[in-house]
Image (cartoon, rainbow, N blue to C red; front, side, top):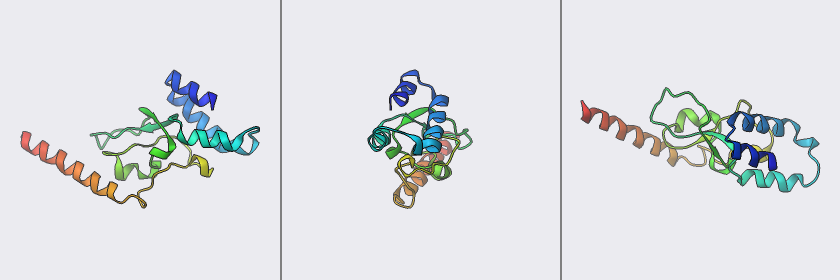
Length: 129
């Protein structure tokens, strides 16, 4: 938990991604208050995330830290890129406690929000021409 807080203080997205991968791979070897630490990591804003963007071609790079409970998985980014943040790490988490807390299937209204946002942006672009 202290390392997660340190990467946020240092604004180090790369180190945060490596910490995420390390925890996912080595969680069984964690000693001490493992359950409490993982529970705190679910709510702490330490995970590299992509912010919503107006550019559909934007590369999926971390631009902010978020709590896991606020994020969609990387696989959902192509559906929600304009309206919601997604997890931005190189690994697919296997540990339940490190799974993103949001899911498109559980929140289908996010897709409507995405379409509305894109339609509004298209209308704004058409009005400028």
